[in-house]
Image 1: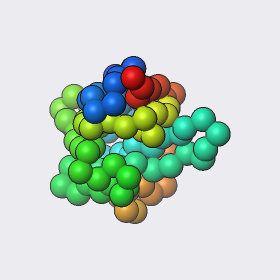
Image 2: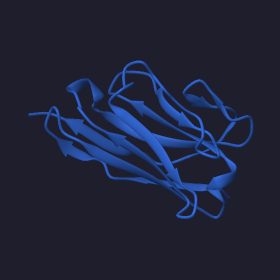
Image 3: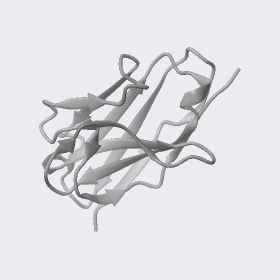
Image 4: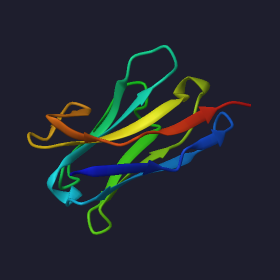
Length: 125
């Protein structure tokens, strides 16, 4: 069974930075596109960014473009989300998800086969 585990969330002041990690176990993440999503209280889950299996393609939602960077280290079986210039509206639970095939459709992976459990990011002074 595909398993993803997020880490790196926490409390940060506006303008600060965090790096989230999404580590895979029991399968080779290198074969899959991976996306980051987030869900704020009372809101629907939304896509944030997606990276292709090779890492050659990465896409972002307009709300995070220029501030967030997605990357992957296939040797470590891990995908990262570097978040800079954080704003209070970035506060949410962040999830990673692996698409089983088809790559990224914009900033969302196609055919999601596995989700992580989420990590809380809180941006507040």
